[in-house]
Length: 183
Image 1 (tube, rainbow, N blue to C red):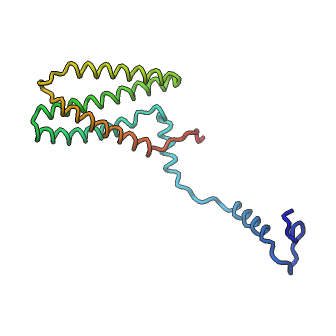
Image 2: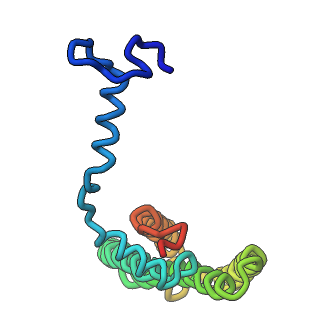
Image 3: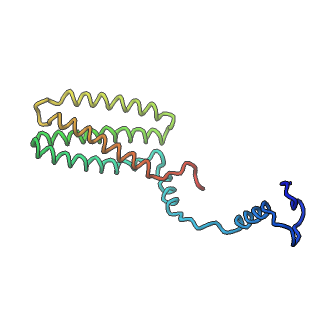
């Protein structure tokens, strides 16, 4: 009972309208209507994307490499115009270091995650330590007055980090993934 005088009995033609029962009747009518048409193309793309690898997909590498190469190409041109070929080669080396650094981690984590999701943390940690050691060896082995300008290389690493991480964040934010299998 909702406390209204007409509750619990049928309305007579002269009775005042009962607002609560009218709302309920409208809700019932709306629920019987056909649902609005929904564009499922986005959901279908997300389903194909999810089925193609889901969380362990390496689809972001293409976008990240494109952003990295674009940033590296601009900085290489600037370096060549400002300081010559040593600067350009330093930028190329820095760009390759960033790409190799992130690609190695992504591949290792994806391959381990496909086989054993519980081992991802250990694989990520081991790959990170291996990359840091390799980067240390590369930096120690590069002569200060060699073919590569180390200042431009460091600048390329910094710019490359922003390009790669920006592209990766945009890829993650704009990729639609199902968290639950829709079927």
